[in-house]
Image (cartoon, rainbow, N blue to C red; front, side):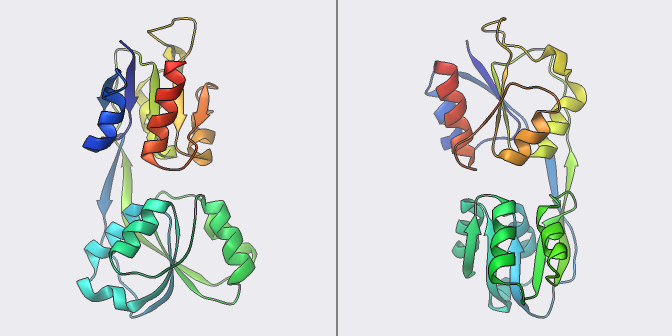
Length: 230
């Protein structure tokens, strides 16, 4: 049977997309997220979030009425946007990738000051772009990402990757040389990635990399299912 490995534990509706396609699923959390203590500014005019983890960590570490202290939010990802809006925050602009958000901020908000809520392991894309264009910002680390590697004594037909950290975690204990398909030994496994940054990291280990159509878990699953049915 075709087997897919997910490097994060899926929600039930996401899991069913794979199982209903007639495929087998193995899943584990390749990374661990831990919210950290931090000092929340008295008032935030413009906040940047590049993941749902940043939103959840911020809400976990500050009073429930903090939404009134954040005036404008800028974010990456449609689910990050949905989570912010669900919790009463005003989202001025959202993009699919950090590179797109940084370009937007440079073009439209060069005179503004930003608070960037992020993890200890984050892309340099936004901080670098803001610094290059003399845009003032303060980086606030609100969660910690650690690798949670696991060795597998088997192979899979596709592996779903959702972050560069997840890629590094998987390959820490699994040899890229063994990256081939059990179903079809003449075909290497698919590394199905949620975006270009994750795909770039995966290409350090294998060239059989594909990118989902959008940066959502469901899109990653849909891409894997479609390709494995071909």
